[in-house]
Amino acid sequence: MNHSFLFLAEGFEEIEALTVVDVMRRAGMDIKTVSITTEKKVLGAHGIAVDADFTIDAAKIEDIEWLIVPGGMPGSTNLATCEQLNSLLKSHAEAGGKVAAICAAPAVVLAPLGILNGKEATCYPGFDLKPGGAKLKDAPVVVSDNVITANGPASAMAFALAIVANSMGEHIAKQVGEGMLLYQKCTNIYL
Image: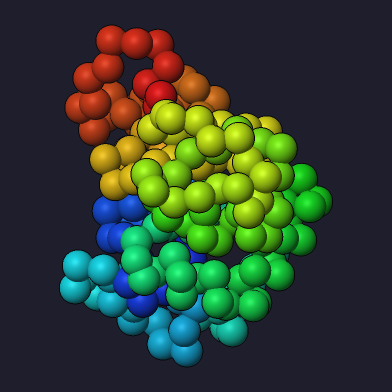
């Protein structure tokens, strides 16, 4: 079974991180939270403390399906300073692995690593994707090959469902969304 990992740093955007974990687990996907600090407890941008499943040094990060980075400030900046995470993201993406980022994280974490080069992507308004050579698209969620990006907290549900749809199919994403009373008239519920 493939495993997915969502990385937490001090100052992460809580709704973006926890929505993704919740939705993926509802879909039956194996996702673990990983603190990039030496402590499992990580404080979010709005004062919500979360106990991660593992610290990055203790986590067994293998058989990877998704590597996911939430936004938030200074969470995104803190993620970007973690060399172990940067190396993992870069090697996974270069091997064609799936990577997802939301809010500031596409610009602050992924773009400088070159992960967005030549891809369409979105991020929180005011952040620049040019260091990574991405084509900025004004949309809540953008799926581009093996990379999914989203623009901010209000898009957290759509972002999470896009990840589920990519891995398990749109019918499962639709089931999960409907189970949470997400009423969408369009057929593509995660966009």
